[in-house]
Image (cartoon, rainbow, N blue to C red; front, side, top):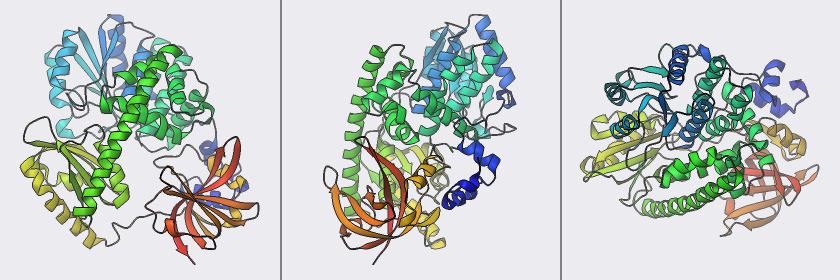
Length: 553
């Protein structure tokens, strides 16, 4: 593709993202990208294939051990489906979030042993399960760990590991999600067993969904997986995905990364958040529309229940925070009855509202203990903050943006003071740390807001982590009329002039944008906004989604 023919603003954005040659642009914008790598470049892949090949040949019972989120569920289904081409002696196990928690556990190891399993293959977990893997081996079973998280040398299990982040790995791309990692194993096994390529292609929808939903960077090989994954979804070959899209009122031909992130992902996640992830596995494994429809209905019901619980926790938290600790630099909200399965989502919404790191704590199963979930803002590594006080926690894990832990009630009472002291030190070092940072990718005028620009923006799909939808700084929007929208009339639509093609619709869905509700006809705005195409009742129109009102005259 000749990038010189693109809008100058789009060319600038691509160059800023490293897409600065025709060759790179062709790969980046192509509907059939080629960025992918030989699975046997991954450390231990040959040995892993040998062990699986032996298990198939010897009729060993294989168990895929997954996780209860989208990444874990899709990984489980992918390997179940793919190994099903060469053996009928494969099963799966996903632990209960509430009874067993994340990852391998001793009780599950006993159950797999009693079921006659001789080879356990983890997906999206296991890289820190040193004790559990040792126990599995004591029971006489073998283990292959496939994961995508960073490996702590002190917790590394003694077994074959496939993980692009492990020490000594030379694989060219390190940011695969758990299902992306499982897909690489499927690629390698296809070569070993001579499985038809169409079987591998059939798994691409699962890999694409997981890659978006797990919020890994949508760059390089991940971008390839998502583009091909979306293409498979549009072919409507998997009854479970078709049924789920129907339940969510999503047109499969219009599926994009947004629909995956906010339509497909939350519905699959709802099963593991509120009940058992088995419903998600059953949906994605369904072979006929009738069965798929039943499971999609169950997930839709669970998702509605999840939203109601989440909204209740969020509202109660806002009421408490506004009345008690709004000025805290690190917000901690304790609610003994908060539902463990949705605390993380609520914490994420609170983090967005207050632009501060947030922890929600609730009663743990063990008397005298609390279970906590945290989410953080850009520039504040919540893992490092809490890890500096590791002695306070019974269990702790996470990364820069999120964490989870178990803590005694006594230590939990001290956590607010400790973390606020740490945050004060960080804010003293960087006074702008807690200011919302919405960065524009390019500056344009109202006259530049056209269908052509919006279509070129859409060429940059799929959007997500590492490839966010561009935000434009737009000057001189003259407001003609203002409408309220939403069930509670909380949103706004401004009809603006300034475009050569006529008026422009500009909408505000983020009610935390300062001053959005006092804009009136006659105002002239400078805004940070996304340029999108809005489809409604069979009509397409250019629409600005405002992220910030930066000036008003």
